[in-house]
Image: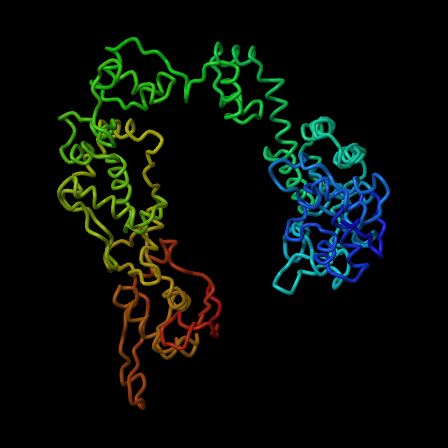
Length: 622
């Protein structure tokens, strides 16, 4: 068999350049695709980039040295051992300024997880392409001779690549003397080559990184912009990942130095510290600790360590007589529910029915002094007290929608709970709200609300709900819900001539402009045509709203006489505020007195149907 031929065209590698970057420059110099070059050299062409840098067989590595006619030791500096990366592929990072200055060549150091900054340009390294938002060198590039160096060669189609210029990215600058730069200078001094020992390298890297991670504070990250902080967080996640090479090494080192037999005997066997706590404190996976303890011959208990329960009568009383749940008993004893179940079986104590029917709230019986409807809603059910409390709160609001909004619940959830409450009690408890009519309890519901106010019932409810007991709504919340219950179609408060004005008025928003205009001209009569001419409001809108005010007792009407306008063919109707409206305006703050601005919204004749703003001559209302 003939010796492999050397290439006619050669490109010298830059110091510390990675093998894939070097071969890419050689393919571009030879004006061929990287796939064709790799095929000519007998290298894999359908693999990810890191397989070329970490997984070349020894015989292929030696043949490549002959084909490229390289001096000894030069090719070894362009690859790294696979043990540095563990069970996950490494991530590329890059410095845009270095790419621009070095004709798009990539150093092998940019592969290493502990290389996160460029000490030459004092900036953090980028990780993703700004155009396709992916790592640019995960896969081997193909038609490199058709694209300039330093560009993203990530495929976006069968014949297209991203092509973004990586050298144009802004620098993630670090302040001079920043701790990240100081640590990177120490890490960059470590040699990189194919024969570097992973354990020895990880020991040196951990010696540099551990003080940095422990000493880094929020004040050190404040001078950085958001992109730089994200870049550092990504690097920190890569370095501390337990699936990375250095993460696996850290776990093995902690297991060897920390998890000694004396330590586990002292902390776990004698001190009672669980493996979960040991894992959180020393940052070692719990399964690693358990397996290591088994290898050392230390007894491992699944879950919470068992506790011996010698008093069978106490357990029988708590479980059967007081009907406490297994979870409650386990929480008091400081153990797990499986331990309690095991002791119930060993002590011959019969189990209650499985599922929710064995819960304390389900089997609790109330005293006969508690009203019958409350006992029917609570006994033999779950969450009965919660439904009663929500019913008590909801009946203070004018509608179920307002109550659901106050309780921060979906309307369907609240409605289904009240349906369940009515089924438990066996009768209808309230009438749903309709337009202009708020919801109201039935006679049975009113009796239930009265019974819920009893001090004994409130005490039982407090004990059952605890922190889940919602407070009763404040008066202002109920008043606000009452005002806006119907929105713009809410009913106008009716005023009576000889009755005092109500303490709270409900004036729908569409009536505010017209009512403000009438208050501004309260000392004179006015007609629909005069209001239309003065304000610009549509004639039909003025007529409908003035009739609405008249029906509620806010205005009174008077038909024009023939003596007032003898030559007119039709007589006009004059309107003026009633004494009750004057009294309500003087004693209540709910009457609008703001500047009159009529907003016409739409092509219809009613108020609120157009987006054109029309302001009349009487635009100011005192």
